[in-house]
Image (cartoon, rainbow, N blue to C red; front, side):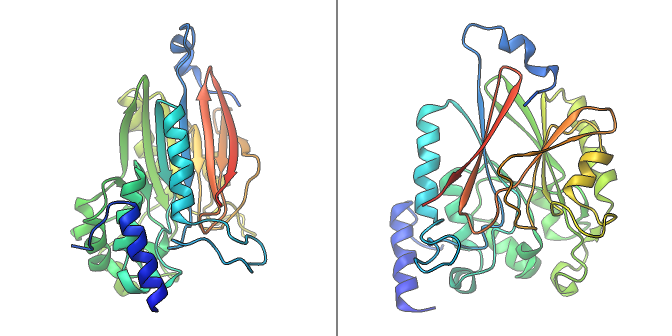
Length: 304
Protein backbone atom coordinates (compact mmCIF):
# COMPACT_ATOMS: atom_id res chain seq x y z
CA UNK A 1 0.00 0.00 0.00
CA UNK A 2 1.51 3.36 -1.00
CA UNK A 3 1.93 6.47 1.11
CA UNK A 4 -1.02 8.23 -0.53
CA UNK A 5 -3.35 5.41 0.43
CA UNK A 6 -2.08 5.40 4.01
CA UNK A 7 -2.50 9.16 4.25
CA UNK A 8 -6.00 8.74 2.84
CA UNK A 9 -6.79 6.23 5.56
CA UNK A 10 -5.51 8.64 8.21
CA UNK A 11 -7.81 11.35 6.82
CA UNK A 12 -10.74 8.95 7.06
CA UNK A 13 -9.86 8.17 10.67
CA UNK A 14 -9.94 11.86 11.51
CA UNK A 15 -13.20 12.35 9.59
CA UNK A 16 -14.95 9.67 11.59
CA UNK A 17 -13.16 10.11 14.91
CA UNK A 18 -11.21 6.87 14.55
CA UNK A 19 -7.84 7.39 16.18
CA UNK A 20 -6.27 4.01 15.66
CA UNK A 21 -6.85 0.45 14.59
CA UNK A 22 -6.58 -0.76 18.48
CA UNK A 23 -45.81 -0.07 -3.95
CA UNK A 24 -48.29 -1.85 -1.49
CA UNK A 25 -47.54 -3.03 1.97
CA UNK A 26 -49.20 -5.77 3.99
CA UNK A 27 -51.94 -4.78 6.41
CA UNK A 28 -49.52 -4.20 9.25
CA UNK A 29 -49.45 -0.40 9.07
CA UNK A 30 -53.13 0.30 8.64
CA UNK A 31 -53.78 1.42 12.23
CA UNK A 32 -50.71 3.64 12.38
CA UNK A 33 -51.56 5.13 8.98
CA UNK A 34 -54.81 6.54 10.31
CA UNK A 35 -52.99 8.87 12.66
CA UNK A 36 -52.84 12.53 11.73
CA UNK A 37 -49.07 12.39 11.37
CA UNK A 38 -48.42 9.24 9.39
CA UNK A 39 -45.17 7.58 10.57
CA UNK A 40 -42.51 7.00 7.95
CA UNK A 41 -39.64 4.55 7.91
CA UNK A 42 -36.72 5.22 5.56
CA UNK A 43 -34.67 2.15 4.66
CA UNK A 44 -31.22 2.88 3.26
CA UNK A 45 -29.28 -0.03 1.80
CA UNK A 46 -26.01 -0.92 0.09
CA UNK A 47 -24.35 -4.04 -1.27
CA UNK A 48 -21.02 -5.20 -2.70
CA UNK A 49 -19.00 -2.17 -1.64
CA UNK A 50 -15.82 -4.28 -1.95
CA UNK A 51 -13.69 -2.04 0.27
CA UNK A 52 -14.18 0.94 -2.06
CA UNK A 53 -13.37 3.53 0.58
CA UNK A 54 -12.33 6.22 -1.90
CA UNK A 55 -14.40 7.41 -4.87
CA UNK A 56 -13.75 5.58 -8.13
CA UNK A 57 -11.12 7.37 -10.25
CA UNK A 58 -11.98 10.24 -12.56
CA UNK A 59 -11.09 8.10 -15.59
CA UNK A 60 -13.43 5.24 -14.64
CA UNK A 61 -15.38 4.32 -17.76
CA UNK A 62 -18.79 3.97 -16.09
CA UNK A 63 -18.77 5.71 -12.72
CA UNK A 64 -16.09 8.45 -12.65
CA UNK A 65 -15.67 10.08 -9.24
CA UNK A 66 -18.63 8.17 -7.82
CA UNK A 67 -18.79 6.28 -4.53
CA UNK A 68 -16.55 6.79 -1.55
CA UNK A 69 -17.26 6.58 2.15
CA UNK A 70 -17.15 10.32 2.80
CA UNK A 71 -19.80 11.07 0.16
CA UNK A 72 -21.90 8.17 1.46
CA UNK A 73 -21.63 9.52 4.98
CA UNK A 74 -22.78 12.98 3.89
CA UNK A 75 -25.78 11.52 2.04
CA UNK A 76 -26.81 9.34 4.99
CA UNK A 77 -26.47 12.34 7.31
CA UNK A 78 -28.90 14.27 5.11
CA UNK A 79 -31.50 11.55 5.53
CA UNK A 80 -30.94 11.36 9.29
CA UNK A 81 -31.46 15.12 9.66
CA UNK A 82 -34.85 15.03 7.94
CA UNK A 83 -36.24 11.63 8.98
CA UNK A 84 -36.84 10.27 12.45
CA UNK A 85 -36.80 6.55 11.64
CA UNK A 86 -33.80 5.37 9.59
CA UNK A 87 -32.85 1.73 9.02
CA UNK A 88 -29.39 1.22 7.42
CA UNK A 89 -28.67 -2.21 5.92
CA UNK A 90 -26.04 -3.97 3.80
CA UNK A 91 -26.31 -7.16 1.75
CA UNK A 92 -22.71 -8.33 1.97
CA UNK A 93 -19.31 -8.27 0.25
CA UNK A 94 -18.18 -5.23 2.16
CA UNK A 95 -14.67 -6.78 2.11
CA UNK A 96 -12.11 -7.23 -0.70
CA UNK A 97 -11.23 -5.20 -3.76
CA UNK A 98 -8.82 -2.40 -2.80
CA UNK A 99 -5.50 -1.85 -1.07
CA UNK A 100 -7.35 -0.81 2.07
CA UNK A 101 -8.55 -4.37 2.56
CA UNK A 102 -5.13 -5.81 1.77
CA UNK A 103 -3.51 -3.53 4.33
CA UNK A 104 -6.06 -3.41 7.14
CA UNK A 105 -7.78 -6.82 6.78
CA UNK A 106 -11.35 -5.61 7.19
CA UNK A 107 -10.82 -3.54 10.33
CA UNK A 108 -11.20 -0.25 8.45
CA UNK A 109 -14.45 -1.37 6.83
CA UNK A 110 -15.93 -2.37 10.19
CA UNK A 111 -14.95 0.90 11.84
CA UNK A 112 -16.30 3.03 9.03
CA UNK A 113 -19.59 1.12 8.73
CA UNK A 114 -20.02 1.49 12.48
CA UNK A 115 -19.37 5.22 12.20
CA UNK A 116 -22.04 5.45 9.50
CA UNK A 117 -24.52 3.78 11.85
CA UNK A 118 -25.32 0.54 10.05
CA UNK A 119 -27.97 -1.49 11.84
CA UNK A 120 -27.85 -4.96 10.27
CA UNK A 121 -25.74 -6.62 7.55
CA UNK A 122 -25.47 -10.05 5.99
CA UNK A 123 -22.38 -11.86 4.73
CA UNK A 124 -21.10 -12.24 1.18
CA UNK A 125 -18.60 -14.79 -0.08
CA UNK A 126 -15.78 -12.21 -0.08
CA UNK A 127 -16.37 -11.56 3.60
CA UNK A 128 -14.70 -14.96 4.13
CA UNK A 129 -11.57 -14.03 2.17
CA UNK A 130 -9.54 -13.68 5.38
CA UNK A 131 -11.05 -16.79 6.95
CA UNK A 132 -12.91 -17.16 10.21
CA UNK A 133 -10.08 -15.86 12.38
CA UNK A 134 -9.62 -12.80 10.18
CA UNK A 135 -13.34 -12.06 10.19
CA UNK A 136 -13.52 -12.41 13.96
CA UNK A 137 -10.64 -9.99 14.38
CA UNK A 138 -12.31 -7.41 12.13
CA UNK A 139 -15.81 -7.78 13.56
CA UNK A 140 -14.61 -6.73 17.01
CA UNK A 141 -14.85 -3.21 15.61
CA UNK A 142 -18.45 -3.59 14.38
CA UNK A 143 -21.29 -1.91 16.26
CA UNK A 144 -24.01 -3.56 14.18
CA UNK A 145 -25.61 -6.99 13.82
CA UNK A 146 -24.68 -9.79 11.42
CA UNK A 147 -27.41 -12.12 10.14
CA UNK A 148 -27.37 -15.31 8.09
CA UNK A 149 -29.95 -18.10 8.35
CA UNK A 150 -28.57 -20.74 5.97
CA UNK A 151 -25.00 -21.09 7.20
CA UNK A 152 -24.74 -23.46 10.15
CA UNK A 153 -21.78 -22.02 12.04
CA UNK A 154 -21.61 -25.03 14.35
CA UNK A 155 -18.85 -24.74 16.91
CA UNK A 156 -16.96 -22.01 15.07
CA UNK A 157 -16.30 -18.62 16.66
CA UNK A 158 -18.68 -17.01 14.17
CA UNK A 159 -21.63 -18.77 15.83
CA UNK A 160 -21.32 -16.23 18.65
CA UNK A 161 -21.62 -13.16 16.42
CA UNK A 162 -23.86 -14.15 13.48
CA UNK A 163 -27.55 -14.86 14.16
CA UNK A 164 -30.15 -16.18 11.69
CA UNK A 165 -32.23 -13.03 12.16
CA UNK A 166 -32.56 -9.87 14.20
CA UNK A 167 -35.51 -7.77 15.33
CA UNK A 168 -35.14 -4.01 15.47
CA UNK A 169 -37.63 -1.38 16.60
CA UNK A 170 -37.80 1.96 14.82
CA UNK A 171 -40.62 3.97 16.36
CA UNK A 172 -43.88 2.12 15.58
CA UNK A 173 -42.09 -0.20 13.14
CA UNK A 174 -41.11 -3.63 14.45
CA UNK A 175 -38.82 -4.99 11.76
CA UNK A 176 -37.52 -8.51 11.37
CA UNK A 177 -34.35 -8.86 9.31
CA UNK A 178 -32.87 -12.21 8.28
CA UNK A 179 -30.04 -13.11 5.92
CA UNK A 180 -29.30 -15.78 3.34
CA UNK A 181 -26.03 -16.36 1.52
CA UNK A 182 -24.68 -18.09 -1.55
CA UNK A 183 -23.07 -21.54 -1.33
CA UNK A 184 -19.42 -20.84 -0.52
CA UNK A 185 -18.16 -24.06 -2.08
CA UNK A 186 -16.17 -23.23 -5.20
CA UNK A 187 -16.12 -19.51 -4.41
CA UNK A 188 -14.04 -19.50 -1.23
CA UNK A 189 -11.17 -21.83 -0.22
CA UNK A 190 -12.66 -24.51 2.01
CA UNK A 191 -10.04 -23.76 4.66
CA UNK A 192 -11.58 -20.29 5.05
CA UNK A 193 -14.91 -21.67 6.26
CA UNK A 194 -13.97 -24.92 7.97
CA UNK A 195 -16.77 -26.04 10.29
CA UNK A 196 -19.49 -24.02 8.55
CA UNK A 197 -22.20 -26.07 6.84
CA UNK A 198 -24.23 -24.77 3.89
CA UNK A 199 -27.98 -25.29 4.30
CA UNK A 200 -31.01 -24.87 2.05
CA UNK A 201 -31.66 -21.11 1.78
CA UNK A 202 -35.39 -21.52 1.22
CA UNK A 203 -36.01 -23.76 4.24
CA UNK A 204 -33.73 -21.58 6.35
CA UNK A 205 -35.66 -18.49 5.26
CA UNK A 206 -38.97 -20.15 6.17
CA UNK A 207 -37.68 -21.00 9.63
CA UNK A 208 -36.62 -17.41 10.32
CA UNK A 209 -39.86 -16.01 8.92
CA UNK A 210 -41.97 -18.20 11.18
CA UNK A 211 -40.04 -17.00 14.22
CA UNK A 212 -40.28 -13.37 13.16
CA UNK A 213 -44.03 -13.70 12.59
CA UNK A 214 -44.38 -15.28 16.03
CA UNK A 215 -42.70 -12.17 17.44
CA UNK A 216 -45.32 -10.08 15.61
CA UNK A 217 -42.91 -8.22 13.35
CA UNK A 218 -44.87 -5.98 11.02
CA UNK A 219 -42.19 -5.84 8.32
CA UNK A 220 -39.95 -8.75 7.26
CA UNK A 221 -36.82 -8.00 5.25
CA UNK A 222 -34.40 -10.49 3.73
CA UNK A 223 -30.79 -9.41 3.21
CA UNK A 224 -29.70 -11.76 0.46
CA UNK A 225 -26.32 -12.55 -1.03
CA UNK A 226 -27.71 -15.27 -3.29
CA UNK A 227 -27.63 -13.14 -6.42
CA UNK A 228 -30.50 -11.69 -8.41
CA UNK A 229 -31.07 -14.40 -11.05
CA UNK A 230 -29.04 -16.87 -13.17
CA UNK A 231 -29.17 -18.57 -16.56
CA UNK A 232 -29.43 -21.80 -14.57
CA UNK A 233 -32.97 -21.22 -13.36
CA UNK A 234 -32.55 -23.83 -10.62
CA UNK A 235 -29.66 -22.02 -8.95
CA UNK A 236 -30.83 -20.30 -5.74
CA UNK A 237 -31.48 -16.63 -6.37
CA UNK A 238 -33.51 -13.69 -5.12
CA UNK A 239 -36.15 -14.27 -7.78
CA UNK A 240 -36.60 -17.92 -6.78
CA UNK A 241 -36.60 -16.97 -3.10
CA UNK A 242 -39.49 -14.59 -3.71
CA UNK A 243 -41.38 -17.23 -5.69
CA UNK A 244 -40.83 -20.10 -3.25
CA UNK A 245 -41.02 -18.53 0.23
CA UNK A 246 -44.07 -16.75 1.61
CA UNK A 247 -44.36 -13.67 3.80
CA UNK A 248 -41.22 -11.74 2.84
CA UNK A 249 -41.94 -8.06 2.26
CA UNK A 250 -38.56 -6.94 0.87
CA UNK A 251 -35.53 -8.75 -0.53
CA UNK A 252 -32.47 -6.50 -0.60
CA UNK A 253 -29.89 -8.31 -2.65
CA UNK A 254 -26.24 -8.50 -3.59
CA UNK A 255 -23.57 -10.64 -5.25
CA UNK A 256 -24.56 -10.15 -8.91
CA UNK A 257 -23.86 -6.38 -8.84
CA UNK A 258 -27.28 -5.76 -10.37
CA UNK A 259 -28.54 -2.21 -10.80
CA UNK A 260 -32.32 -2.18 -10.39
CA UNK A 261 -33.59 1.28 -11.27
CA UNK A 262 -37.02 0.04 -10.27
CA UNK A 263 -37.67 -2.91 -7.97
CA UNK A 264 -38.70 -6.29 -9.30
CA UNK A 265 -42.18 -7.24 -8.10
CA UNK A 266 -43.00 -10.94 -7.73
CA UNK A 267 -45.94 -12.80 -6.19
CA UNK A 268 -45.05 -15.23 -3.40
CA UNK A 269 -46.75 -18.65 -2.97
CA UNK A 270 -49.71 -16.95 -1.25
CA UNK A 271 -50.12 -14.38 -3.99
CA UNK A 272 -48.65 -11.50 -1.97
CA UNK A 273 -46.31 -9.10 -3.75
CA UNK A 274 -42.63 -9.23 -2.82
CA UNK A 275 -40.19 -6.51 -3.86
CA UNK A 276 -36.55 -7.15 -4.82
CA UNK A 277 -34.04 -4.31 -4.88
CA UNK A 278 -30.28 -4.16 -5.49
CA UNK A 279 -27.97 -1.20 -6.06
CA UNK A 280 -25.01 -2.40 -8.08
CA UNK A 281 -21.54 -2.40 -6.55
CA UNK A 282 -18.59 -0.33 -5.27
CA UNK A 283 -20.84 1.94 -3.24
CA UNK A 284 -21.83 4.12 -6.20
CA UNK A 285 -25.51 4.01 -5.26
CA UNK A 286 -27.51 4.22 -2.07
CA UNK A 287 -30.86 2.44 -2.12
CA UNK A 288 -33.69 4.44 -0.57
CA UNK A 289 -37.05 2.93 0.36
CA UNK A 290 -39.68 5.05 2.06
CA UNK A 291 -42.33 3.10 3.93
CA UNK A 292 -45.47 5.05 4.75
CA UNK A 293 -49.24 4.89 4.43
CA UNK A 294 -49.23 1.29 3.20
CA UNK A 295 -46.86 2.00 0.32
CA UNK A 296 -43.23 1.44 -0.63
CA UNK A 297 -41.48 4.22 -2.53
CA UNK A 298 -38.19 3.09 -4.11
CA UNK A 299 -35.36 5.19 -5.49
CA UNK A 300 -31.59 5.24 -5.82
CA UNK A 301 -29.25 8.10 -5.00
CA UNK A 302 -25.92 8.50 -6.75
CA UNK A 303 -23.02 8.79 -4.34
CA UNK A 304 -20.51 11.40 -5.50
